[in-house]
Length: 497
Image 1 (spheres, rainbow, N blue to C red):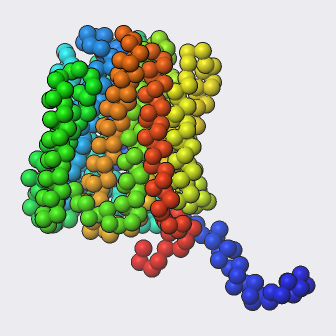
Image 2 (spheres, rainbow, N blue to C red):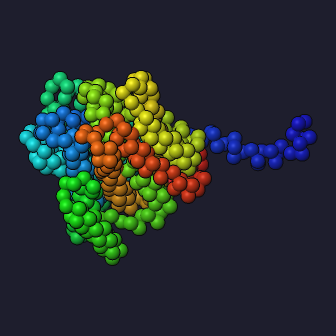
Image 3 (cartoon, helix red, strand yellow):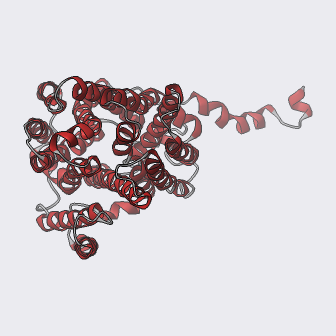
């Protein structure tokens, strides 16, 4: 009767409400056993890399004392590894297609593990940086090829769940890294922070050999050697210039010349890529709406987030005077928050959609990062834990959204090129983030005339990187409301997807 009085026939009511009634019933398909197994095994490699990155960030002040260096200068141990990743990642897609994903993946684990051993045997900063560069070569093949392996295994409708399966075990590295690293450098020798990668690498190598299938596709053309030199030269020059900018390490003219050379060589690669049939970094992928927008926003967001592994342990140990063990126990809260989010990411994206998630969650993530500027030694530990846990929770959702949406509309034949470009962008942004955080900290210390960084100097640095993170939010407004709905179950996928 109520329906009749409202002037709506049962048929009209059915037509109007059917989409709303059917939509909640859509369920993201379960992940196939092979996809799940591949994701977990690939995650072992990511676990090793993330464990290494977070351990060394916690151990930097102790290593600085051992080598007799200023702790702030030790960020070169982070940037050298990230720069090596960025330089060699563009070659990963072609190498995987040419020699097979399983062979390249196994070789990358071996190289990374050998680099870890050499890091532990280093007697000075120069040797450490050289070993970190070798680690970066292994990581440059290990991370993107592992992701490519998963993308080629999973169906499009499995991408969100597959990314969650991939990243949940990998996030154990950042969770375990800070407290383990702090414990090792406090009660043992810092060298064991690198030797711990050996058993992890051995387990990953055995698992890959036994269970991973080999995917191989004919490369589109010959290896773009000129492109590798151009991209490598542009990145090395630009990052060297950024690393030395305003820090008095070299003559200012040298710094300016290196930055100018990086820009010029980068433009040269852009012209080269337009003519080459199969460039290492294929910028035509930016024409794909979801890939282009996700890539651009991810770069800005990750630049701000990339400074956290350097700034947070440094602030706790140098600014607050905490021990490395205590610093590690506090720092791990950020990664623990990310670990908690991963199982819920699929449901959150299905409920709110990619566009709204990237906008509002991006704003909250930037605010939580900026709140780290308010940390003081007098803060209750519970309050610091709450900020870091919440921030890690939000950032994890943001990265899951970016990493999944980027590949949603990429054709299968272009997955290799998309993985190379996206992963290179991730590592470049992380490198810039560490450099920007160190530069902001150095500038604040110079302006305040402090011999060693004080808490107020770290506050300035966190405000700077927080604003960089918030700069990614406006890009979310450019995305359509329905972006990625077929990936989460909000919209049924089209036939053949």
